[in-house]
Amino acid sequence: MRTAIATLCVVVMAVSASGNSPNIVNGLKAAREIGAATISLLGFDGGAARALSDVALVIESFNYGHVEDAHMIIGHVLAQHLRECLSGLASR
Image (cartoon, rainbow, N blue to C red; front, side, top):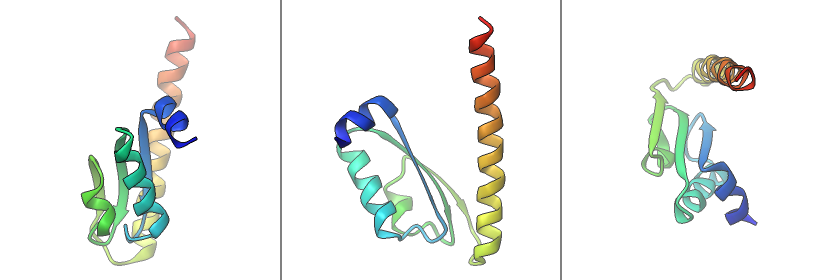
């Protein structure tokens, strides 16, 4: 099942304040095993997820609130950009 999902997605994105959550680390390892690109939004020092990510955007703060707020803002910017890209495709 993992292969089918990742083949369709091509990119796996992880979001974690510490970068050490077992689910995040294991997900990134599985993504790498099947050749998916990995992008992570992380906090603190990036934790173990940093080394498992092709692209890691690390909010270097040890304050959960600051990290989560920054992740939320980045998520909104990405969602808006995706909406704009998709609406441009629909109008073609």
